[in-house]
Image 1: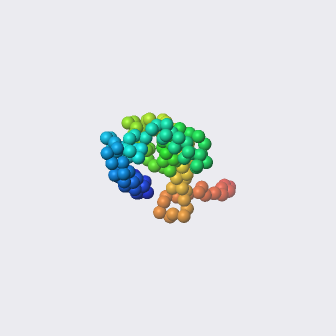
Image 2: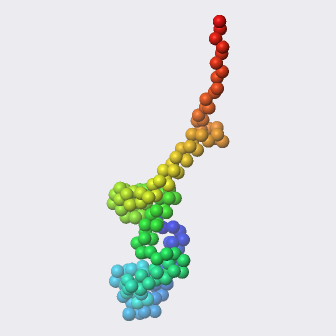
Amino acid sequence: MLPPGLATDLRAHRATQRQEAEAAGSAWRNEHDLAFTQPTGHPIDPSADHRAWKALLDAAGVRAARLHDARHTMASLLLAQKVHPRVVMEIMGHSQISLTLGTYSHVAPELSTDAADRMAATLWDTTNSDKPQPKPEEETEEEPEAE
């Protein structure tokens, strides 16, 4: 499943690519049906792709990073937004949940804090009378002993 905005952008890109194919005529070569190509359908040159990535980072005012770092950022952001780790595992293409959780364990303390906050809200939320409420200890005065 793709975010709706991304799906829309990819459809628009595909339409542009079809126009490029028509313009290229017999020079169009996209045997592998790649989504991102040169205007002739050939695969993008890795060095050109790298230059475009660096230019994007510069334009965004972001420090230099590998393209693969964007993948790590995406997984960390998903986990920090409380997306279930199994869903993140599937998006990342990991075969085991342990790989996802082991790789992105730096997000775990944030999730633990959130879990504690949620439990506190559940147990001690006085605004919702449907939830069980711990009763404060009542102070009892000791009665004087009878003589």
